[in-house]
Length: 231
Length: 353
Image (cartoon, rainbow over all chains, first blue to last red; front, side):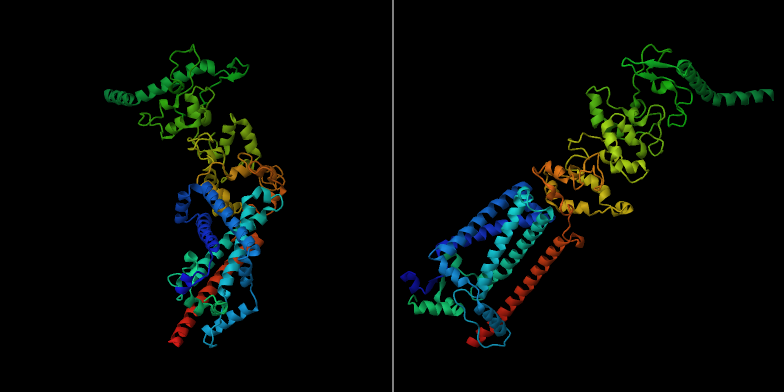
């Protein structure tokens, strides 16, 4: 954190590498959702318009697969970065789900219902962020595996009977829908519509959040930085 | 008195004379022709060794739509008897054209025929290509609705089979051919799929059996619960195909993707439990292998026409249902959580103030 940042009361929340990974994820998931749902709901006139825009079903498939390969590459890179890099390792540790997160979740429920006085105090990542992170990761792995099976159908059917591929298709489609719902209801609310960040949390572009925001939303992280003398 | 009787006779004669005269002309004409053609042994040895029967009697046209015609009305190029040259093939459009004075029925079928594969073959000079009489018959032409007609549903396959012999043999062994043989009225014969006069080559985009039209053509019957219900055949194949990768690609204009006949066969369509059927589990690897190199018995494991919304699809149905409720449940939980969060936050802000 530079002196200027500190002077302005800013805290770095996302390093440049994470921002690039996040931006790739945003763009690729959008492309995949558009091309995927166009096929899934091909009877819809908007979907048909999208498919024509993409140059027919064949080209739609190519666009979808190119985006998918990039997304998988992004995921693999991210996994290695989190497991091996000096920046990633402590980040990954903070993403582990523990007993505390379940307690936090229950306490926030009690608080929101008016049954507790204290709202839970989060570290760098609260249960919302962790749920989002692991949900997205597991979802992308699942959708990638089924997607590859369907892509290389002649290869997959050397090992699997046809109904497994039908199953893969069903899972691929519904997993896409579930992921999309999570993204739009949960992530968009948490980082755009939530009163504490509206119109948006700027960290995905600038990488920074204000120290004041951190103190209110992630007090444990704020205190930790304060102790370390970084604030 | 005598005069008046004579007058009446003359008057009546004047009225009926032309009729008598025409009758007389007809009988004379027939008599003249049957002088030679009326002998049962009157036949001709053709160059290729075949014998052509030329036996024609006064009864030949009886019962046909042309019962009242005489020979020269169709064989109008015969002007002297005996004729020196072989009469040309009869040209039906001599009478059957729009606005003809004979009152001969005429539709656009004749025009359609000239644009068809058969008509174009004639135009290119293929003497073996069929003209009207080759399908409708020469002397015993009956209305298409008449069960005895050569173009009646039950007979048309045989009529087409006179030239398309191999295809006829395949068709006869198929489920459609077998049902046709049993006299089932709903089953398609050749014209059911290929059309009647507008018959085009299978690689002509105008054809009813062009690759992008096949599923539509089959679904005319196979999507109809009314027809299929009679035979205990499912109609979901049409919908499941349309939702499948094959169906969607076909709908968006792919010419290489599998349509119904790619898997089920064309003229040799047989029920799945028939060992000769292309969709018999034993033959599925070969059938799928036409497009998917290296297809193995795995291609036959599981329902081919699978509908995730149908309970009979088993694990696929249950997985789809699980995901459906998981998605609905997640949505509800998230919406609830979001509203709770906003409610709690408002209170917290109030408390802070």
